[in-house]
Length: 294
Image (cartoon, rainbow, N blue to C red; front, side, top):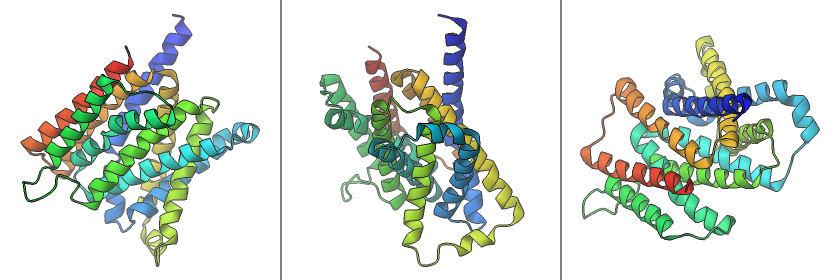
């Protein structure tokens, strides 16, 4: 292996670890913005406008030269957009670790989507991943015999949908091999902004909250926007240069970061039953990642 290739892989791993750490802790500045009077949709739109503007400033010529519009690129961007928006809204409303664990049902959705969109046949091991994921979810959501083990809040439904669209965006990325890292990132930023604007278009008075921010909060918006700009590029670079199975394992570090930050910053503690169900979901994700490497 050449030195340049080795450095490339090291940078890719670093980028994925940065993404895992950032996504496991980014819920906290969003909660600060929400407490300051800026709801999740408005704050998400504000920070991704910052990311989009930074992207256009840094990669404008390349993006104009490629002009890589296609329905595939748009679909990938909208799927990534909903995944980002759904995840942020979920962690603002629900318990961080429950949201993360429900989000990480994505291997289940990946198996199903790969079967229908990529014509990849499911084998017995993939079916075992699906069963393990579903059983983990049922254990975690179990509320007794009187209630069905399904998500009990809007935040949990958002987490499920965000995990599904995360898997969908990854499947679409597999097909979009002709797109560069800046272009993939650009469509992610556009997708988030489009989803946020769609939400705001049906609200009665969406913009007054934007005017309530004091200067320190706008500084936080700029800081989070710059972080998400770097995060998107780092993750896209990592996924491009690291095998999908290795990337999936590295991303699991987000759960560790989420457990630590939610405990120390929000005082959230999961029950033993939730940990058992969550462990089953994690094992299913790791098993799928290991299976893909064989």
